[in-house]
Image (tube, rainbow, N blue to C red; front, side, top):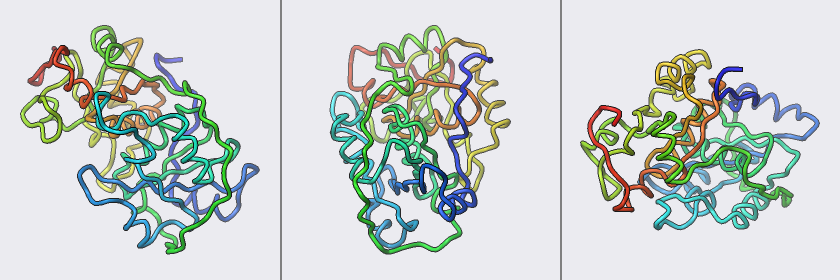
Amino acid sequence: MKPNASTDSNPLVSAAELAAELAAPGPGGAPVLLDVRWELGGPPGRPAYEAGHLPGAVYVDLDAELAGAPGPRGRHPLPDLAAFGAAMRAAGVRAEAPVVAYDGGQGWAAARAWWLLRWAGHPDVRVLDGGLAAWRGELSLEVPRPAPGDFTPVPGGLPLLDADAAAAVARSGLLLDARAGERYRGEVEPIDPVAGHVPGAVSAPTTGNVAPDGRFLPAEALAARFKELGALDTPEVGVYCGSGVSAAHEVLAMEVAGIKAALYAGSWSEWSRDPSRPVATGADRG
């Protein structure tokens, strides 16, 4: 097995595959659908959900249910485990039923839901490849009232980094920065208090993981991208971004490629708030 190789099944589902599963559910039942529409700095996702969503989908608020309150741990720290479990049960998530998350098409928010559920121990979570834009079926205006689920989070299903562990990975492994290149280089910083990147990190914007239509590149193309970045030549790979959302998308892309990566959930929004943490700028890995 290659370094950091993953043995998990495909974490993506196409719109056609999802439609077939909804029409003819498997032994675990039809997938529980989570609508996680969200945009960084954009309007709230609920009005878009109420204007039309996949039939049976439950809206999940990324800021309120997939993250804790902003603070020293970053802009989107991990949520309180009990609160997250309660939110997922309210959405109808069951331990033995498959879950499919989707968003408006960018994939970041859906990937955050995928990562959190997998980290919290759910065995069968996928992301709708291409999001709502890829769906060809009818949309619904009805807000479902699902029966309460029974999912209880048990953390540890996916690897997680704190700031010290991320620094260690940058020194001895491969730490990828999923933000736009200009933010990595420190040329601009529209959100966080300091511009730049974690010393030793390598720029790998999430835009390189998808085609123009928002769907993920084929597994072979993703594997080639991450091989070129050095992901197969190191014992450990970590990913961070601004606040742990787009980095989940990068972890998902690596999962598609068959490579296991750890998420630094606090990401740059945590790192840059600590004046004792070093900051690098420019394009070189330093």
